[in-house]
Amino acid sequence: MSSGRGMVFPLLGTALVFVFALSLAIGAEPIPVQRLFAALIGSGQPVDQLILADIRLPRALLGAAVGASLGLAGAALQGLLRNPLVEPGLIGVSGGASLGAVLALYGGLSLVSPIAVPVAGFAGALVATMLLAAAAARGARATILVLFGVALGSLTGALTALALNLAPSPFAILEIVFWLLGSVSDRSMVDVWLALPPMAVGWLLLLTAGRGMEALTLGEPAAQSLGLDIKRFTLRVILGTALAVGPAVAVTGTIGFVGLVVPHVIRPWVGHRPGAVMGASALGGALLLLLADIVVRLAPTAAELKLGVVTSLIGAPYFIFLLVRRQRGAV
Amino acid sequence: MSLLVASGLGVARGGRTVLGAVALSVAPGEVVGLLGPNGAGKTSLLRTLARLEPPAGGQIALEGRPLESFGRGELARLVAFLPQPSEAAWPITVENLVSLGRLPFRSPFGRATEADAKAVEDAIVACDLDRLRARPVTTLSAGEASRAFLARALAGQPRLLLADEPTANLDPAHQITAMTVLRGVAERGGSVVMAQHDLPLAARFCDRLLLLGRGRLVAQGRPAEVLTPDNLAAVFGVRGRYPDDGGDEFFVIPWSLVSGHAPDNIGSP
Image (cartoon, rainbow over all chains, first blue to last red; front, side, top):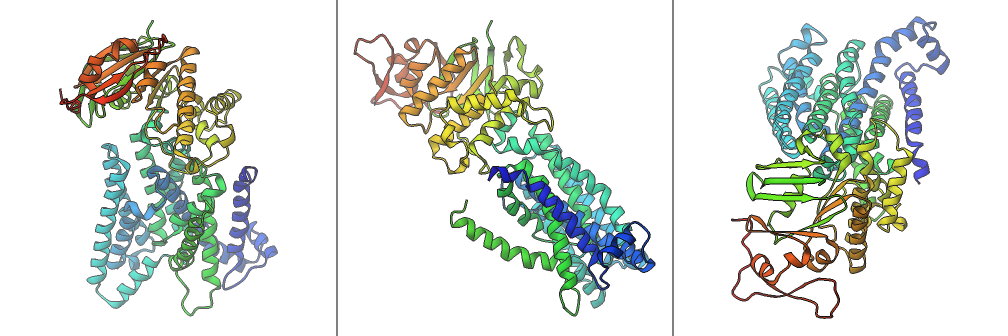
């Protein structure tokens, strides 16, 4: 089995490229491969180029980036807390992003500018991140930080519910609820450029934390004796998670289960080493979200399904299946 | 020259001082046992020596330099700490677990070198783990797991190994193996400081013992000097049986409670 482990990254990478291309090709107006290539290098039909640049490309890029963020952040938090039940939504940053975006929708700012919602969502994520980072910088332990995050999440959840409660019109409620369900459709390259830079910083912070994750396998005292600065490491992982997930939620709404399920699926493939789980979960998350978004487009429903609905619909039963199978002794 | 010297050392647990005015020194090639009842501060002392806790007063010097002057990585390459109980958070293989002991030697993103591989291999062989190397650590018995964690600490080839009850959970054969392995560290010039509850093992395998009780260092010296009937009664509240087989190797077996004597009350001076 260990000889197969070296293949995990190339396999996931190849699959990702393939599914990304598929995501560009599939939609209301299918674009065959030759036309896709022609459009990508700028010599295709104007319609194809328009569809690609304005609709498909931002959608696929966001799907991949958001999926990678969720998978990576889930693996990082699980590694930090040495607890497989943790997921990125738990630290309150998603809640902060949701609240910011919902307030923008509530206040009708979305009518003023198309980027008002993601910008407000990002501001919400930023406030939550700064609160968490302040707690982490004061040396709070990882479990306390997550409890803090959970409380933050409850508070933002309550405020979001309040906004729904006091919403001026049924249309505002509908808009808010639909946004909360999570989607990457009808997004533009502006959304991509808004979300990608902070996400990339978050990815960098997390992907360079591999050795610390490995050391933490032995518990905090032994990890410390191996040279790990627990306080700085905790701060790095919390900040990295917030930077990866905050913009993702701000741009796409809440997409559940990816951050929880992907590391679980990936873990046995890389021998359970928490450093390797992070990188592989980033690829796996991107792959899963792109696939789910393709399902969304192909599903013959009257209203387009929301991505968050689909990931949970696929994710939850698969997760249960996985747990039952492992319970039966297959490690 | 001593490898490790502590003077006037105060040791705290959870912000409360549990040991005061400890003076100790550990020479290269020496195996030192820390004895004392539960709560006497053995683990806290080890944690302080490993710089996981700040001392509540006094100084610690390693190789003649103040302990706090060492960089994190530098200290990690010299000193290994083996906590008890040790548990792995993830079901990684024994071989991967042992390799974690090499982390302080790896450059960022650097792959394992030949020296790393050799140190891991030596540790696996020394702890009798060859058969188990591909097994997930979480599927091992408690004793097998203890050996894997000991091997992890050995893989760093530390100058100073601080081990908290390294023989807990081990069957008699593996207790002897583990103590022999720890002696081997000393024979190669390293030093070992271990917390021990097993008096016969401590007496047999340690060069020197430190007896902790009532918030202070009660006695230190060669095993026969420390494990006297008076000390056993005062610190543990037990009477020991000493060998009368005429052999020249000293050991003692805790045998019965001293009547009317409550064992030391934990950590309170």
